[in-house]
Length: 116
Image (cartoon, rainbow, N blue to C red; front, top):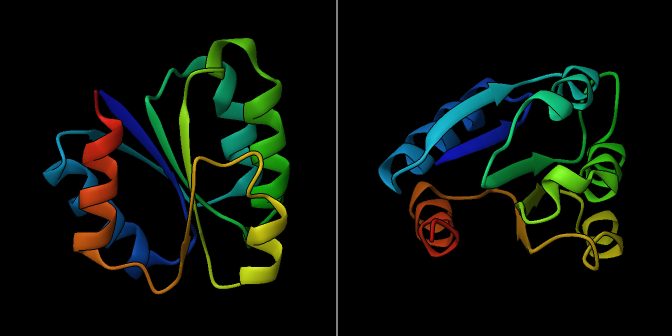
């Protein structure tokens, strides 16, 4: 299964990629919010790990686009954010909210739950 990581911090994107691959996913990495929105119609991930603070489009905008898309209706979304107040506002649309810093082990273990 494929997991999409939308994160602009190069250190975190590397940790997220390794954690997801360890959980059995093939990771697709995007660091720009608008690129993520433009890519959504062409992919079918099982899991999306989503930062909120991104260049060119926010994680909230991306999450809205995900939930409005019929072909992504079953995708699981993990929001990883350093802004707990904003993340909490998105809780109804997300499957899981993780406060940054997110550890390798934490993401690997949660991702493994969403694999099947």
